[in-house]
Amino acid sequence: MYAKTADEAQAELSAHQQLLEKLISDGRGASLAVKPSTLGATFDRELCRRNLLAIAGAAGRGCIPVELDMEGQGLVDFTLRTAIEAASTGLPVTLALQAYLDRTPADLERAIDGRLRVRLVKGAYLGDTADFREIQKRMRNLAGRLLEAGADFYVGTHDPELVGWLEHAAGPFTARVRIPDGAGRRDQAPAGIRRPAGPGICALRPARRGLHHAPPALSRRT
Picture 1 (cartoon, rainbow, N blue to C red):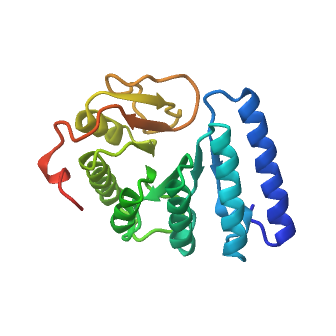
Picture 2 (tube, rainbow, N blue to C red):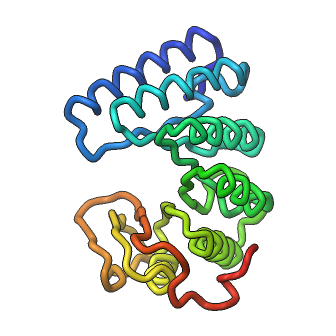
Picture 3 (cartoon, helix red, strand yellow):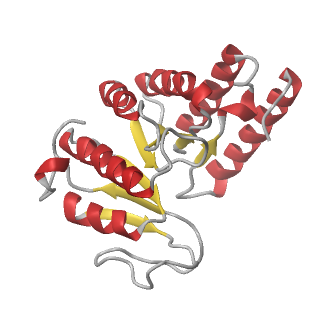
């Protein structure tokens, strides 16, 4: 639910801060995902910016990673700008970037230049394409660019073909994998990927910098 008033945004800020206190005290290994729309982004960008930076600052002091979720297209510029601002001060912020948007390759370059860690996702709102194979291709190209840049990054996906490609492209990496049950899913995760029981997503963090045996077409800048 997004905030419609300053009071609602303040209530969400307080809720996030209370959750952070709990994570800092007993949430070892946890991270906090934040939607800018819950903190005022739809009606007051400056208020939301202050709220996001306050959360990121508190998370940084407690060594809790924060991920800014990317929502509708109207919030992309603001969310990217705020995430880069936070990262420039050393705060532990990750930004989700959506492969189904035509603008994402350019946004990725801004993130790389700003030393902002990203999490690649296909996208869950209204994008510029809904073609499954095209989005897969975009995901591979974005990941290839990050590997080329030697950047640490995450990928959130339910797609076993993409997981398999990442294993081939990135070489050895650490992984936190939760592959949900559901029709059309393979029973086996790719070799080298742990598959804990239970629903969730796949999140990959390459352990080796640089491109490793990636197809040449995917190793160029996109």
